[in-house]
Image (cartoon, rainbow, N blue to C red):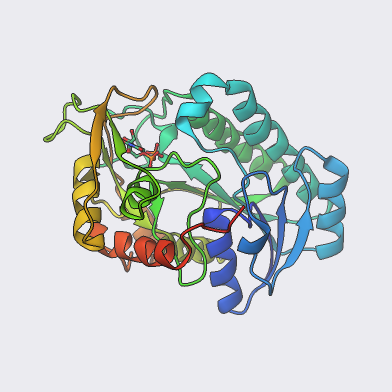
Length: 323
Ligand code: UDP
């Protein structure tokens, strides 16, 4: 298939692009490089440097490449930032995303895979989180993704645009070539590994008084290659649907740090800090629906394997993509 990938220069997008190319698909990347890196774009892909706010540029790329499907990763995805700058989240994640959908409609492109998030659920009333739970986001990031999910239902009904929305839990790990490099790093695993690399003195633990066994937040870390596999399976679907995408396992912040100590064999200093606004205490996926509908099965079932792959990329690329 021919796939247009927005955000294909970013962490998750770059690895999905690589995996699709490995499996024989033809790929074009559209990215404005504000978060992404040019060198994270697989050289086998066509590259359009464009911003989704630019309706003309998006329309031209769509017309020129004529994709069979679009995968939409381009977004802002930081919970903390969304709590101080909601405008950025509603503009980029909602309004600019609509430009993309409109360009698809105008060019007769009917298949869409959307990066959604477990942050659309807020603080769920039970665990693991399945697709029947109510979605009540507690930060503008989650709200912006939920708004876009709702928009998708209407483009499906009115324009027959078939979508698969994948609600990621915590993407982590790396492929051989591509990994996680944000210019401002706020994510747990890369921040812990920076301490192991000697690039940061200590990792901060945001909140030790949550109602969890060790007082720190619990997340469901999913390997980026398992995530990519789910996206590629989603391309085959002809019906629209929403799926939670995690492994079903929960790991606390302290457990992640301990795991990084074991994997790297290096001392990692941690300091306890207050809670970060917008963080739910525990987010763990039920993956039953996606296993059933897409035949998806995670290959990386434990945090050690995930951290090992991240560590091996960071050791090879201590400055990430270098810019
Ligand atoms: N976290 C932390 N220290 C850090 C970064 C993150 O304690 O330097 C915590 C954060 O509060 C959350 C968990 O680690 O409970 C995962 O955060 P991350 O930003 O990696 O992903 P999120 O769950 O926000 O998407």
